[in-house]
Length: 359
Ligand code: IPM
Ligand code: MN
Image 1 (tube, helix red, strand yellow):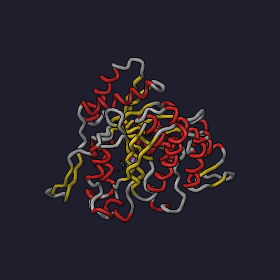
Image 2: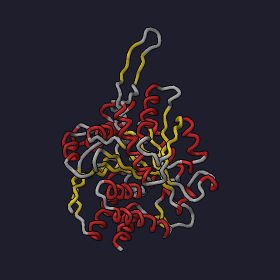
Image 3: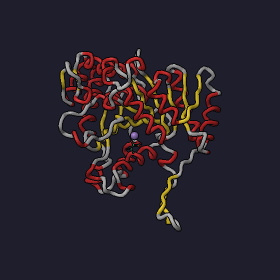
Image 4: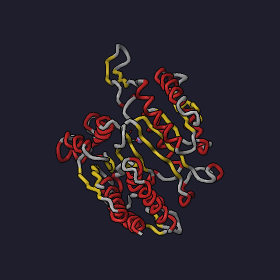
């Protein structure tokens, strides 16, 4: 099979980690007899510098015409003073919307080998951690009406509207329940239904979807409680489904309890098999070009692409176990380095993982 992948390296460490993910994909291609074709596209600061716009039309068109998108990261201090609509981050939001990527899967898995990096007490994470945040990605306050107004006596005011339709909630809830069916059959829906009307509709709609999944247990948590429970008793969670903004916040929290944001991949899925895959970490401009970036989140994102868009389960397993192998051999990038292990660079990590895939 020929698979067409749009690659958007982006800014900061984006290009470095994407290059390592491609080493892994090429190793998979060789070992399992697939052909991956890459089309490189511009977005974010890199696109601003070359074209004056953060998300050129060509990028959207070509991404749409591919089977999947692999993205590094966007943003950096160089573009921080641009107005909101021209910032590199806007490219990310534009891609999510234009490609219909409404379901964002952010698995937070604690690798046994990295247990010492977990900031929680051992007893909280005994037996490991494996939870999945399903974040709604194309609605809510990120895309609602926004603006500024002048008030009579309170100066300027600004607003951003949080609005959800039943359809938007229903489809992302369905994704969460489908995922739960393949995991531990438990969904926790997170909202602020004690205050927000949009959350009350969210909760009602999730309950309707739940009726189609009698085997799955559904809990509803308020977001403040969910944030607390994540550090108090993270093992109670299997799948968490929540809105765009709550998912943004809780997925960072969930990633930190596994010890290292440098390890976490993500998938943003549309209807059907199409998806965009990117590491959860950002562009980390402070370490760009130093060889210190951890490419494992990008490599694991490529594994998610194999699994969810291409349906190549064995291939995805091979990539994930290659990552585990180098960790168990004591090899560490600086972000996960602790005394007694051997430090390796971004490209060493990528090459070693690719080698293990080929074995
Ligand atoms: C994320 C990021 C983005 C978001 C930013 C860069 C716009 O924080 O993917 O979590 O808030 O969605
Ligand atoms: Mn975020």
